[in-house]
Image 1 (cartoon, one colour):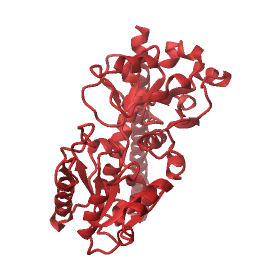
Image 2: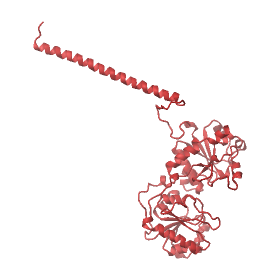
Image 3: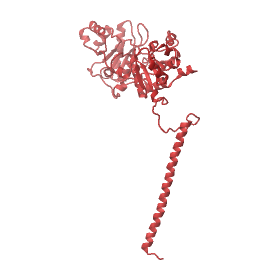
Image 4: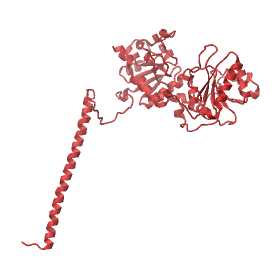
Length: 427
């Protein structure tokens, strides 16, 4: 049968559509096969990872990321840390409120509390004495309490006698030791015996990277990193920029009158944080009124206000020998204030801050403490004048060990993931 032109065109169109449909169906089938293959492939190797992760294979493909970055094998219900706060230790919120003990030990454990929370651990504060009631024991035995942090100087009072005699429980304890424990130092054996069994110095946490010991580093971070915005420029004092401004660092505000008088005569604006009535009375009784008016006493301050004082009101912190190893000079450096550092003490012949004494200009300026106050004040003035030079001002400096991310890594590795004292006991 002969087809006219219209019919031939219609037949050709139908044939074309049929061929196109076949091609389309083929493409869809091929793509479907490919998708199914990829899914099965992924499942296969995800399963392989889960089943063979303890074998010799280097191929690990996790189907889901771990819930916690630090010690992900510890379940959520077992991630409780007990911080014993009955003596000198404080948690983050308690310390930042400005109440209670505000010394270096509290500053340090507040940092540990914050870092542990950042790492996914639940920190509980415990002050009842002694630790070891029935609920405490139950939680220790079932593993819901992973670690206990205690003040290293007051270990025996922390636990009931039955807990002290259980090595598998005591190896969970970590001791916050502000001062270095070295085997060659007098009193080491007496102190380590207070740890009971296991008497392992690796259970001791240290706030600074001391050398020559077996303690575990879990340093504090500089709180200003969290309390204040990051420094981007040098911050001159807000109070009379024409005068050099300094914070006097002293435990009891017993600053030598001769030295304070000379500093004021040289044009310094002085700041102090004298807390007691006796220390405030000392200032009034030992200086003429015109000098006292040049000394700004801030009294007790919250950590946030203190950090702002260091950042916006002073250009330097002047040390007078004590307190030793205080966090204050590190807070000062983080906020752009130099540390005028005494390298010898008349009675102890030791620097005030061993960790900073070799840091050098423009951050730390060493001077010698002398029995002769005139020689001492000349050394302070030389250092202070150098620190006040515009070319020696700096924005901020934080030693690596005391940066937040570094501290989190130390806490995870040395406080949480290292179980060496317990493993040694098991052997």
